[in-house]
Image (tube, rainbow, N blue to C red; front, side):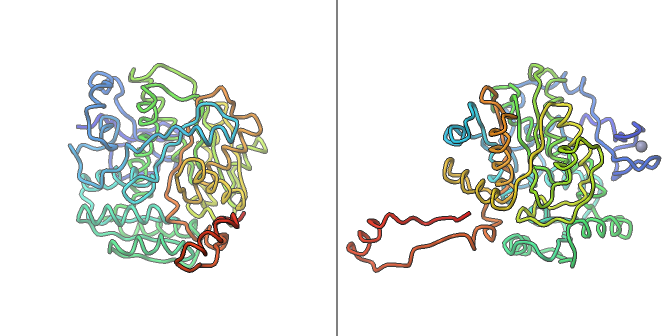
Length: 416
Ligand SMILES: [Zn+2]
């Protein structure tokens, strides 16, 4: 059984039952899952969690589902990598990377989709749908296939080829929309009214879906020996992931699993789509929607649904929100690959480049224990590199030519 009390409006605090609802009928504010934390505290323990499955369901007590041992693809419990070589490059001390490239479909979206589709089945839905910038499309199509559900995935038509192919392969309906993500998202909102028996994971199932991101906070604390870090750096698309990592840390404190500790939470955006970073920089609460233009397409949400809440949490925690341009994003991908052997997608490049920038500015300090979230695999966004790679001409299969080539000290380079 779950410990869910119901849904609560984040604006006016009105309560709703735990059904397929996402907006307050009174004020249209977003709805949030609330839990009986005292009841969770009474049953949970570090030992209970550590003896659970090696995936996100080890945190089932904190998730809004009733199903015991839900079927799925085994998302979550990805490695927390101590990144000493990258830390040295950036002048930082204790740095870790939460490597969510290692999820079943190569991004953190497998966490939120696992939770959303488990809940969707409990609520009786048989069709899984979503608006996606790519990673969510991959994950919904794959999980729907695994769970025997139908899927309907809507994406902007200009997505990376790999993300389109690796969605189509799972079957299901794939609708390419002539418009950007914000157009696709608006269309999904309208379709959710037309097709009330479809589970739109990021529309009518959004409160449950978003809860999956809390596991990014839970796991980091467990992997640090049941301690909270000093500072985390999180990419911002809708802003939901950042706020849920913060909620995850808070719930661990509230249930006695970790000691209270102030965590500074910083955000990362691409300059070509930085409405939250711009509001942070100008000291404003007003997040002005933008037309995205960036190679970080998985972060290209010009009108972020949770932008205000992310901004508010970053400010209250004493963090910052930085933004980086396309060249810096590629440099971030390259730096991470060369120092730690992790190939991140463009969103990971945004995170690492912003980490570097905040470290240079002194916002992130060498005496802090820092965790950066690397949320998707570079294999999905090879286009970002393909016109920047300089390869040597092929040589003959003989020692002379190999020696000649090696003596020229040329290397395969990714140019920035
Ligand atoms: Zn309300």
